Amino acid sequence: MTFVLGILGLGILVFFHELGHFIAARISGVKVEAFSVGMGPVILHHSYKGTDYRLSLIPLGGYCAMKGESDFKKALEENLAAIEASKDSFYGVHPLKRLFIAFAGPFFNFFLGFIFLSLIAGIGYIYYTAGNKVSMADEIYPELHSAAHEAGMKTGDTILSMNGTSVEDFSEIASYVASRPDEDILVSVDRNGTPLEFIVHTDLDKETGSGKMGIVSDSSSIVQKERKGKNFTGSVKEGFAESIKVITMTIKSVRILFKGVNVQNAVSGPARITSMLGDTIQNGFKAGFRAGIVSTLEFLAIISISLFMTNLLPVPILDGGLILFAFIEWVSGKKLSPKVLYYIQLAGIAIIAALMVFALFGDFMYFIKK
Image (tube, rainbow, N blue to C red; front, side, top):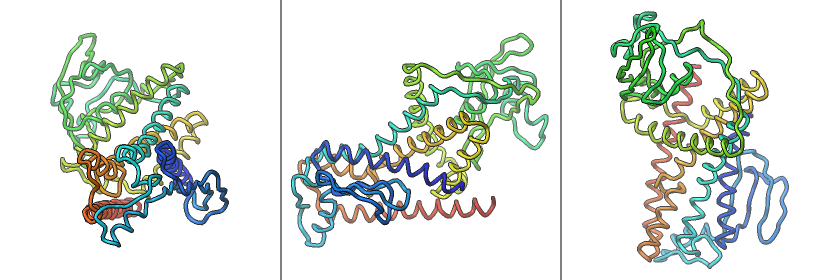
């Protein structure tokens, strides 16, 4: 059941991505020959205004088949100097229109993530967390390192803010620190009524890629809190701010991979993501309907915005590669040679294949250990 829920969740993200390509293609005058909800064998279909709309068996998103996508293969086989295409085909339109079509898919993933995060802000949610009074981890677990203790913090300190950002509970503290590994954080605390400040250099957890400062919460201070839903304007503002935060986190995560992190654990493949999404949906709804909706939307939003970033990478066979080629063609005013495109795409396929093998091996080891 976990994988079924995960597949359905990922299917929504893939479908929305393809919907972006579909809408942009129609706007740009490119004929869409087929648009499918789902993959694999076609169950139902109906042709309307030149497009065959399909419902397919496997609920893995869908696809948008545009006219002329095979023109590249034809030009390569016939050893043509340039791709020959009709005006209503993908390679026949102006390069900027092709760029627009390629960008629309990833953008729709960003937009979907933004919608989900805005909905969360509008719904509001209840959560349980400890207070902001902390203890030094090395005093409880001697084997652990405590960067906070080294910086001068003590058990019983109440953390008020971090780098000027106020924190009200331990969940906010943990979230802030986790996203800032191997960084200096200015921590403002209250110690028995006396305000103090410490610069804590966080540790990098090489297994997860997250930051740690060696503190633990006060288990006796766990309380239930409610984050009330906002009005439409407030929800949109918070949704956009959270979307930008996810983008920033994604960029940071990539940078952290080059700091000696255990990439096998830090990078998740499709199987692990599907499993995690399914678990999130199941566990969220066990805690209540609203909690289930919020946790599901949050996870989907993070994945969707991450897909937006990933697909924009200038790697051939990804949308980012198509965007790059279209941009080069627009600037140079010349169509790229099919042979050049072919060899670049071969390199791109090799890169993606290597990453997929690595991610799938990581997934395999994850499930073996689990």
